[in-house]
Image (cartoon, rainbow, N blue to C red):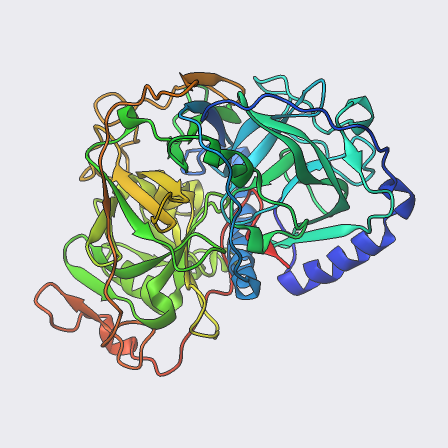
Length: 555
């Protein structure tokens, strides 16, 4: 599913592929839509792709560089879509006090995480990526001639690779509806028609849910569909995103993620237990302390203020302007930020070097010792600080290309943009190190993103220590996609008592990367070794963002 060419060529090919698709596939049968029960918040096990930070046999290493080059291109392209976003307000519904958790799965190296969804009457089970960086729900039609069969469905959960709408009594579509296209930041795209049907995650059900029945794809997504968990302003189908259709039925209008780090018992595994997705609340057994919430900038992306990055307590990189805004995105693999800031970060990591010193295909990556003891502290919204442990700073083990070294999971992006758009995308490379809550809010609460440290994790360990292993955090073996971990329904919640903190950052001013006066400092307030090259007079923006599951949606 990775791009093999530059973004420009991909965009041309996308337009060609979509225009050549037979329009005769767009006609859909109208049928009566039946109602289905709604139930409490749900936690879903998340499957994940296996971690790329793993030693592979020599015969597989030749593909590593090509994979990394493609991944970086996808990451950069994903960010570009941010510049087309708009704002809108969600709808609301009656509340019910209930919650539920679903297991997630990871696919090949934590490349992306997915859950099992049910659609239609009787229900058909499809694996879908859960993506907070977009807002449309789409599934591949069984009549699609260009939809590549998912690689995920044969494993573990017994799902199907496409939706046979002719077998659903609750399916409906407008015969006169024109086709809709959705393009993602990695260059991938789908085309289809807008339809409605019953859609469920666990026992959490939305009847007459608007979605896109995909009749054409330009490349393999690895799953049978994608569920966007962003805000309505990003939706091409003009429908209300699934999470907003159901989340107000619960006492706590929020959804929560725990992503576990890849640690397979089988070295040849391609799917492993990947974490949990909870709707209607949070699983307090997975994190320590309170959830700290940071209000989002507007209802489009889940965008929060980023104030600074502290690298192993030695270097502080301060942000300002567009550099001070970050998107929390479950559909992105890596963490991407402005090139100046990322270069300053790696300048403070002992042993780091640029990827092009090893291969031109690693251009844009930094390389770090896999056993690095460096960690990063990200400061959000004024006084909310969270650690990205050393084990998550390394992404792909380079093997014979550079023994003992890994590609860094933070990549830099260059280019110019308006200061009104975020310059950071925090993908799963960061989110694996925290418990994350996306909260719509209730009463007078502001929509916000919340983080908490994972329970039992030693954030000071080196890069060779995997999260979730015995003695270092929550065990990752918590189920696979398709497994429901029952919560509470019927007017009460079984969640343990919990507390939250809301952080509102002060208006960013003064010097910092992204401002007229920019630079990085050490803990004594003096310019760091890297800061002399970091003074800028124009704002720069990400031109690429690493993702696998989808990519930030592009309109």
